[in-house]
Length: 129
Image (cartoon, rainbow, N blue to C red; front, side, top):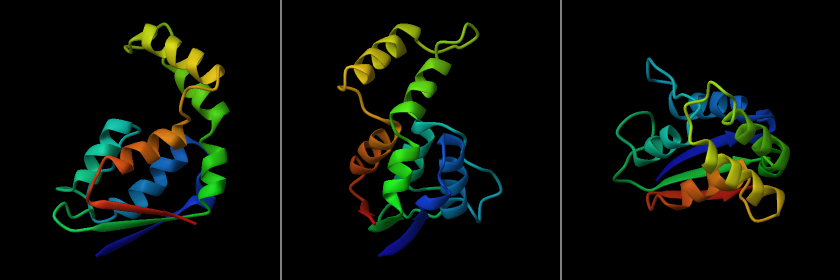
């Protein structure tokens, strides 16, 4: 089993989450993962970076409570609002809906989205500490 340790204490926003992900999973690769949930999901399949797709990979997320707070409601709301900027190529109606869901306590935070993505990969075991 491959083990990876995410240092949640250094995660203070979305940008620092990807810095930490690149440190843990992309150290031996000559390019870095961009700030994309789709790219993060692709990483977890394996085939590039440190994840091995046909083996069990354990991710130990230290100080996960700090990361949960840092990637919580306010950060998620800013993330969605950035998608609504006039020059944004994203589906604005989708992100208006996501903001409404978040404001009504029905939407997922960025942290919860990350956990959901991890749970979709049968080769990954997440341990929050």
